[in-house]
Image (cartoon, rainbow, N blue to C red; front, side, top):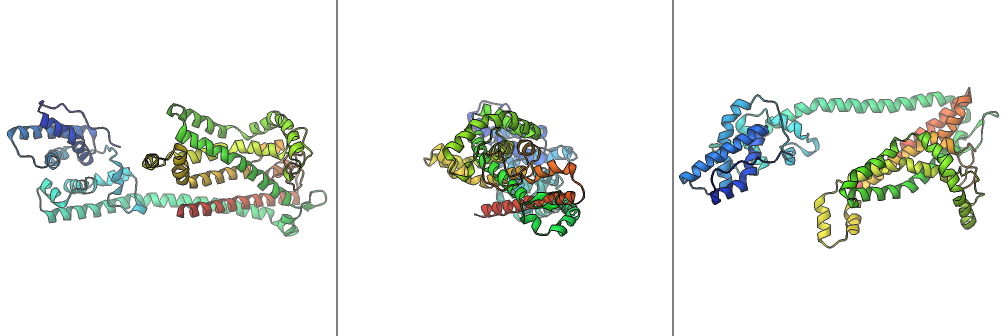
Length: 468
């Protein structure tokens, strides 16, 4: 946004002219700023415009439309000054709607690109385009201001739009190519990772075939490798972490974006995001020495009261190193990701929609439910999928908390738990050799595929949500 219009002293205490000044000074300033692109020159033109206008006013000139009259004077003043500033390169941002200047919406550049292209147009073309697009003035008013005919104004605007579109296309072409090259690099990187994993695991895939994905035995001594328990452990721990973290993260995002006092908003957001900077090994040690022992009495209570449910069948662990503990640790780790993405989009909810909802009689919670949450639904899904991706690939924290058991179980409170793929690779890779290495890499390929599938599903859900 442009800086505020300058406070120029009124030359006389004439009430009528002072009213004209206060009503139109910002329009004159923004018009001069759009033409000259320099705050100091715009202030000077504004001051000179009102000096000339005051002299004409005191002479008794008839003023039918003060706005058009002042803009015409400002245009003549700016035309004189333009000869001295046309070579300057300093740019200032215009109003937000400058983005709409004759540029297709799907290829709209940023404000800086528009300013650079606008600054290279001839003066009359730029003036006509500014008055037509930014001020919405008619061709007749523009013709009167520029002292030309209406057909001449139409020609000026046509040429200005064509030149502006050509210059913007010329400016954005290199950026499109460069961003396309970066996108291609990412695609090649992902393809290379997949190719390397497949090549290194090909021997294991040929030796075991589909049995590698279906069987539950992982015995390097006997040469039997089945990845199903580790696939189950990966999905089970990650989904558990997401179920625990998503509601809390959503509540934090809503509180910071909509309910928190402004003075506490930035500190709370910083503290929440600080959780993402803590190393995973620290989370693992916290899970073993702090959260695990604290969970022991809770695990005993769950087995005693809810043991009829398969999730809490037991027996309860005496160390607290259970799947529930690992899920809680993973939930804390993905909490800042889900919260940050959701909060940023909640904060972008149009204020007019929130105020309209409140004006219609909705309470603050009803406004959040009917306006904020639908507006940020895709962000909640995106943040949740990002958090799920983090949980799927987490290695160190889960490795420290859980021991490799190679079982498939729903039990959250017992000592024997399913083990995620990443933890199994971290624990067995140092001692692996021969086909053992190929089997571990094949399980890594499975994890890579799971991550891709999760992201593809998330993309489909987000697209469907946006369409609805």
